Image (tube, rainbow, N blue to C red; front, side):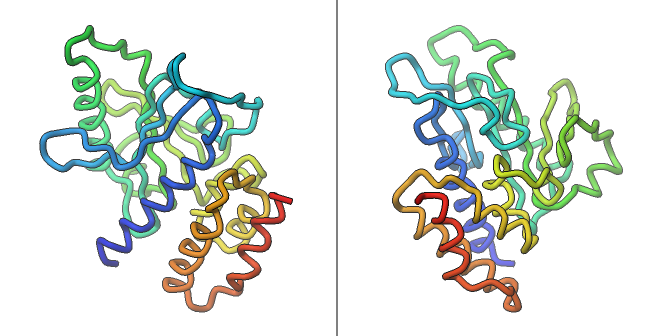
Length: 227
């Protein structure tokens, strides 16, 4: 798998989350540079300030695992081609430290309580589970991990609850029945959604040529929710 293909997966994942949080009290920033070197964090979900326009967020509408959002939420994502391993969590902690330092320039350090760390993986991290205890939560596919002194919420996309609120997660689950369910139930908010769906579908087909699902079906089912 080429680095560019992996980058595509990360880009589409971030754009999908941007759509999830459109017109909500949070904004999403993608591929943030967190150091003098080019070290990129996949997604940061930031609580809007009083000066920024926001919308309401109905209870129970966020995908599972995101119900406890804080002022700053740092998220790393691993597609089906990547392992969520110890190094990935080390990198996430490094991003958190750099990000917190950047916020503190010329101001007091933001409190730890303002931050939440997330690790999202398409596949269950077998290697990581052999090294550290993954603490199950009340939701399928959701685990808590204590990495050093830092709690991390782990979200396994191929194991989450099959529910309309998880539609955005299901699109990245690599399981055809879940992908179809996600396309049917994701309440797409942006008019440019068709282009995103086309790119996502084409990547799936390139990786799984036998995918029993046409582009027109994929897009039509997704857009039914806009009518």
